Length: 248
Image (tube, rainbow, N blue to C red; front, side, top):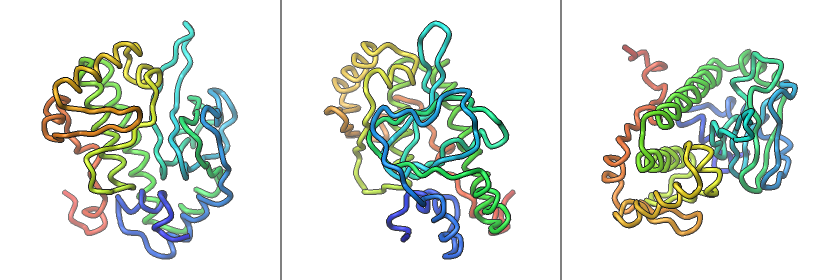
């Protein structure tokens, strides 16, 4: 497996360079890729939690089903992400996971992660960093749900996806593919599908976001950041100062 072919390796290298030996260890996380179709539920809440998976291709999301029949989407997973990391210490799933689109998923048991802990300090440290960032993403999602208006919610989420995709699929473009339906966006942002549609229309009318089905163009990145009150510090930090002995 080459680094050019692996979103997982590119994801890890965002935090810190990895050696050829570490790349070989990461290769185990992409063994035996399983094709999955859009809408496939990878697991449901309360299922037994004994394995993780890496998302090799396609997008997915985690969710909780509520007592009133509604759904809250918690996280959006992109190619290269590890799904189920927070459940390492739990015997049951805390949330369900469903595919957004056709893709490939690589399942691996918890013991494979323990093998990485034993063999590589660098990869262990990066895994802690990834888990930390997943926690920060949820924290930012909470702020987005509770304290931002509809325009800010949509703008902030688009910018978050844009920055995350840049880390593994950098192409120098100011556009992104956002394969999320109105319903998924509504369940993620705490809005109705109609409100999501109207918000995109308003952002389009103001020249901030142009959306054509699943393709989103950002004509003025700084203007959209100002609209959203977006601070990307929670997405761009890496671990180089720690390994270089320069941390404060």
